[in-house]
Image (tube, rainbow, N blue to C red; front, top):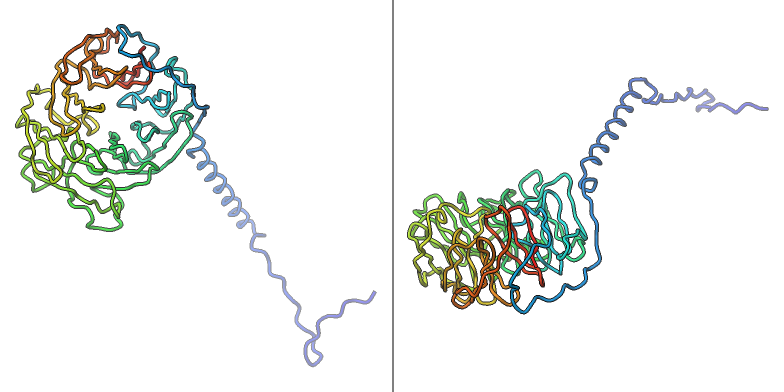
Length: 423
């Protein structure tokens, strides 16, 4: 066999031999580096996997529940407890879509109203709930992550399906305030407002990551109580340079989410003020030092003022979570001061009557107004607050605030960290 000819250079000279470059990975040091890189990649992947949200989230879904029986024609003469369950993250009982939703630790659970049996659940083993409430017929669960209450999951109460999610900037201790169209998070330095798909429609206050500076009307203020109605948000501001507290009402949505449209902002006649409720264009503000409930109109002018004879304990501080304990019926807003329930006209928030010795605001159940009292419930004439009759309820040793929600024939009581179902 003939040998392959070697390359020939010009003029018959032999070309120099071609030298093959040595691979850099043939050296022992390079192989060690490659091995270390591979170990680091595997370790990082393992850490990501072990700390991922998916790994620490468990879910069970359900079919829509059967319809509940209708509510009775009138409040029963006697009611007994069907079941109770922990629900420390819910400030009020949640009853939607023939389902009771409880919220405790990292778990949101949909329960059968008659048995308390869990039908579906959404559980975050690595996160704790900040607060849970209902709006738009859905359940909004706010979780505490690295920075405040920053993760929100919206759930269908009948099945447990996720309908929306977002990351937010809510503060620890936040509660959710709804005007029916939007939800606003309370806080001392920032208020965030979302529409029904959890897209942010407005932010007010100390924005954590400023994109466009000088868009907020005031800086350096702290916030007291918050209320909402008719796509507007009302907040008590305590600002440097103001002689007293300030009431500001702004729109829940605007062309730019970081540029609030202020309807009005007025310095009040006193400090320690609390915005109690809003209805339509009216805003009710409690001035504790003056012992007055003042009603403000759509332009911020004072429309009327009413004496408030409340004990010092009711006036001592802002309520926990930055929202007054109120409820609504077709004709009235019910405000629980701490020792009394006060009925305010839904038209203009004028006080109509007061009932002392109550444990919470009232709701409509079985076509009648019921208010929690020590030892049971008071069934009231909604027009004048007179007691029609009382119904005994055994709450054991619990004697604190009671919040109510009605769901068909079932009455739900939030007793601190526990929800109880009565029938």
